[in-house]
Image (cartoon, one colour):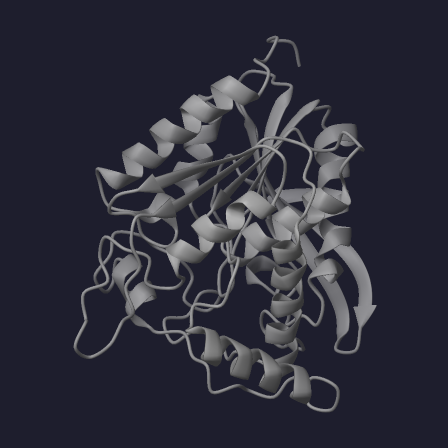
Length: 322
């Protein structure tokens, strides 16, 4: 297991996780690691969303400030793990991500010696995190879960949800990579990137402003995962779900997407969060964006204040011995 200097620079390491081959060829995931200056028994593992990868260095800074070593996983066919022969961000079952999460958790716990682990998922990564945590229940692999605007339902009216999911399901057997008419608005990434209307810098090859196509196999996989969650999971550790107080649908008449979730319906998150496990806390952030940690102030500080309060209440303090 060789660690190299990550693209984020000093202090960040990248570990390539080989995952064999699929129909497109070789598959890898990438574990990004940043450890604190003092040994810690506590760690966090971050899972990104769709058309995304880990770049939020201030999130790592926050966790290090709480005494956590920080890890982030660029899932197969995303970001650091995307290869030229692959369809970006494509998957046909969300459970296909479980092997890289399993391996990342093994490294965090068994190789690097952490005995407390917080799993942090954003958007689609939030849905994946919930499903994985349900699969891993009873094994003592994770101690708490934080979901930042998790993708718990499709952000369309009921009829459109059924039609879109039905089309994806019909196309999947013969045309799994068919591009669906669903599209991701460029207003949200434009509101983030510093070359447009935002304050953040990220790789536009890995997280392009126009996005990547929504494909039938991917949407069908997401929908199966969502319906599994809607029936009820049994995550056996404390779960924190955070969402903005409101959503906005970007249109020509509604160009302003600041201060709201411009990707998903936050009321879906509030509705389905209790189905995740036995102990779920829901916090709403006024002025929060879809990725809450990228929100403008004061919403961003509120996110970190709430997260710090919750972790201090539900995760054991570090004993200071690494």
